[in-house]
Image 1 (cartoon, rainbow, N blue to C red):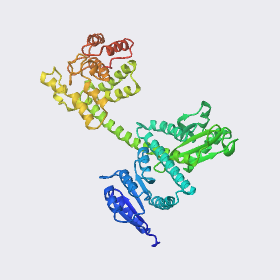
Image 2 (cartoon, one colour):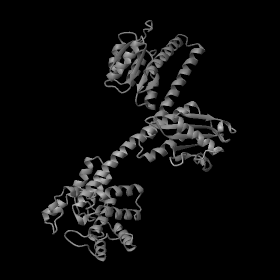
Image 3 (cartoon, rainbow, N blue to C red):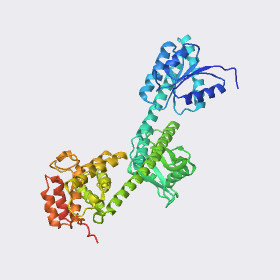
Image 4 (tube, helix red, strand yellow):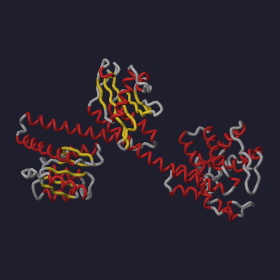
Length: 516
């Protein structure tokens, strides 16, 4: 160990673990280390002796890192400040740049990187002090301008990385991630087009999952599995090599150099890894009319694939949890319907009718998905109703009917406890509301009732009347149609009733088969 070097650095962070690890590392490297848990403590330490460099977090109690940098800059504008943050933003970067910050490190920070940054800061401080003494010299001015350009480039880099991370923060499904990754690639590295491939196990060749940018003829990147001679074969071979090696690739060439088509100026191919296993390959291409890719572009594309891989893994776990949860809920429904021979498959039939109505009424794919989920669960609250009431063969008493009326609230509350979506809960709660406001549980009327609940209400009423029940036989179709049409404007939404009548007339809604 070189004991001659005794530069002093101050580390400011509200996490004891970080302070301990950094202190131990730099002490072993022969430096003198001081620590503080917030900006206020740091200022006290700075007032007690000489410090050569300050590492600081941004988010801390009492005094944050931005305010600390401002105070240091006012007191000693030669003291270099290096910011460590897990949430880089352009606003914070600009504010700290104005107050003597010489570098930014993104958490989790590599200790060797910290030491390199510290050494660089010391060199920059020496140059800065020299410039203060010789500020009339051209050489000193050029050094400051270079430092400023480097800092601005660092800010631009941080902003780009932050933009990439934000692009994957709001993805709702794995299929959206595939399209988001190619859209981000085109946006960030200014590629003419980008493609995302996985390897098709049936052919052993690349299969395109998503694409962005480019002209129709650029689809030649989506080559067949046969990687024989020709341009498509060469491009396929590049993708296959990256998939096999797991190493990012940057190729530049014109006039057929490096196996690229003559009009391709440069190409990047980066593996998408999940838990160190290659899942797919992301490509980006520029033609001879655009700029060639650089090593920085390859870095940005690699960061994009890392962010995408993290989003895919997180969503896969999330979707698996919800898949199992839905399977459990549907199991409750099956158990509920198994208690009563006459209502078996009722929820499935109601869902199918509601979806037919929804399509005819022009519902969006998102609304149809909501119906597809809420339909099978609309009566799940009946699991909280006693069997002697639920399975009673005769007419219910007023008190018993009041108990039955609790099932929409019980069902909605069950889903609420599981943290499921609001729209589905509202439909389950509101499928027994009436258009004239006399329904239950909330007495909603007309447009106050969710539109999808109004659809489900008609589907539920039809199947209930068209099915055998413990207390009565199924009704004739003409009578059911008269009852539903007669309820337009009182029990049901007239628009939904009109569409139901048309679909029933055209035999797109059929009565259930009799129970054996």
